[in-house]
Every structure is written in C-alpha cells, then in structure tokens.
Amino acid sequence: MSGFDKDWLALREPADRAARHDGLVADLARHLAGMGNARILDIGCGTGSTWRSLKDRMPGEVGWTLLDHDPGLLEEAERRIGQDSEVAFRRHDLNDIDGLPLEGVDVVTASALFDLCSERFCEAVADRLASARIGLYAALNYDGIMDWSLPHPLDERMVDLFNRHQRTDKGFGPALGPDATSCLARQFAARGYDVRIGNSPWRMDASSTALQVELLNGLRRPLLEMSELWEKEVDDWLEYRLAAIGQPGSSCRVGHTDLLALPV
Image 1 (cartoon, rainbow, N blue to C red):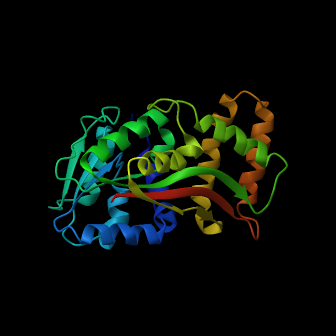
Image 2 (cartoon, one colour):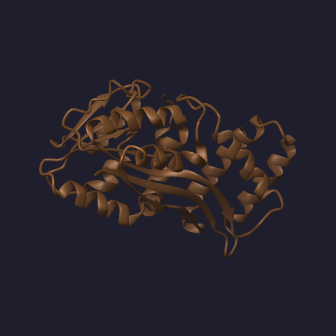
Image 3 (cartoon, rainbow, N blue to C red):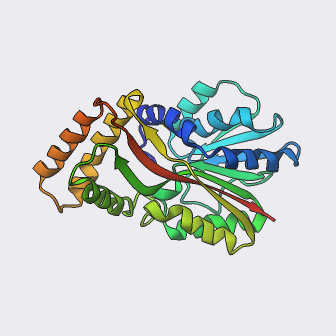
C-alpha cells in the first residue's frame, strides 16, 4: 500500500512525537538495552518519523532497518536521515508478511499503521513475530476519539461516520480502525507476550492550526463517502470547525493508543 503524502506526514510528525506514551518508550529502551547490538525493523516507515522520534531514546548500539512499499517515501527518508551507518532501507509490500526481513531483528516498530489494517493482517503479524519471539511496538493507532472544546450539534454524528469509514479497506483488508490496539493486544497476549498499552492523544490548540486545518479538510471526502448526510451539512460543519480553530479556548483532541508487546 502507498499513497501517503509526505507533506501530511511532515505536518503530523511533531504532534505524533509529543503524543507518544513516554512510559512505553522507556520500557522499549530498557528491553533493548539488555540485548547488545539490538536491531529494530520499522514497517510502514514513511519518511522515517519513528526513527527520528526514538533514536535518541534507544540504547546507542541499536541498528535500524526502515521498510516501506512507497519508493518516494523511502527516498525522502534516506534524504532526511542521510548516511547513518546504523540505518538501512528496504522496499517491501506489507501484504507479504511472510517475506518480512526479520533475521537478526529484536523488535518491530510501526506508527499510525495498524488502524489501517485488518484483523487477519494483525493475526498474521502476531504469528510471524511470535514464531521468532520478536517484540512489537505499535504506536499512534487511532482509537475513535475526536472531540473539540467548542462543540457543534453534529460533532458526534461526524465522528461516528468517520470511524465507520476507518473500518473500510485501506489496502490490507477491512480495516480495524479504532479497534486496532485491542485486536493486537488479544493476538499477542494469546501467544504469551507481555502486553502494555498507553494513551497517546493529539492535543491541539492555536499552535497546531495548520495540522487542524489539514485534518478537517481531510475529513470531507470520507464523510461524503458514507452517503448519510447532505453535502451542505458536511460543508457547514467543516466551516464551523475551521472558523473555531482561532477562537479563544479552542482545542481539539484526537485519541490514539500505543502498544508494546514483548516476549516473555
């Protein structure tokens, strides 16, 4: 699967970094510190935001392989990261779970990925990692929560429609959307892993205006595709939400959860 815009990924990266659950990042670092020459495989790496967020918090000897199917995103990741001897890049279609390059890998990481994936996909990942006793750090999975400090009567309806759209096929089968973290937790717990979950919400105010505008503009198409509201209703709601961004006390929360599953 490809099609993610590098400008959108760049815009959301600071919010993602601020949102990550610090306790789970620290737990991951402690897990890797005891291994020596540990290696991380970051799947669906995009432009390398997971590496940029975690590299200074992991033990110094950790090596990385960044994997994505989109050659443009991989090229941008290489350009931004430069000639770091501890980072390798690999193009791979994530629909081929069996072909993931897991030799020598201690932990697989992914950010904002599994909410786009199906239960079958998550089960296949769990089977593959469990067979080699490899850990998983899956961050920033959308959890279905989106709310605003300045309410509108249609907020709940719009979020419900968006959440239903999130469960449509995004390239990896019928997507789990808000149910992704709970599905991963079940799958890995059933395979004897220690599973920990932490909240990682975006909290946006006037300092995040550009991100909020892009987020809202990106909602229009999914809401219309659900075909339950008139176009004018959607556009009027978006107009209200966009105008509210700059008002005093205006804020927006978009919920995410992080998961760390480690073999025991």
